[in-house]
Image: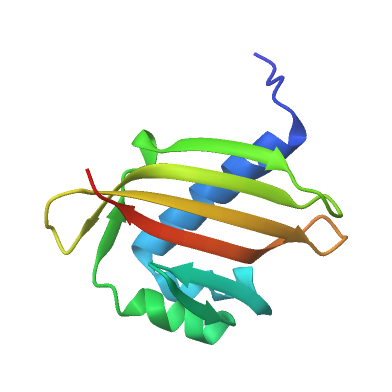
Length: 127
C-alpha cells in the first residue's frame, strides 16, 4: 500500500516517534536535536541551549509517554521548510497517575534535509 501523506507529515511523524521514544529511554540522547539558540519553555520557565534543556529533562524523574494515544498536528512553517508540530497526550512520571500534556515544537531546517528543535513549549493540562 502506498503512503500518500505529504512529506512534511512523514517527517513530523518520524520526529515525534523518535523524540518520545528517546525521551522515555534516555533523555540525554536528545541533546543532538538542539542547537545553542534552541529554546524550551517548560511550565512557564524558559531554558536555552542543549545542555540546559537536557539537564532539565533529567530532573523530571522517569517519564513514560503514551505514544499510541498522542494526537499530532503538523504544518509547514513560514521559513526555510521549518515544521510546526502540536502534540497532546498523556504521560506518567515515576509510575504515578497519568497526566495530560500539550507540547509544541518548531523544527528548523539546516538546509541539508536535517532538522533541529528551534522552539519547544511544554505544558501539563489540568482536567
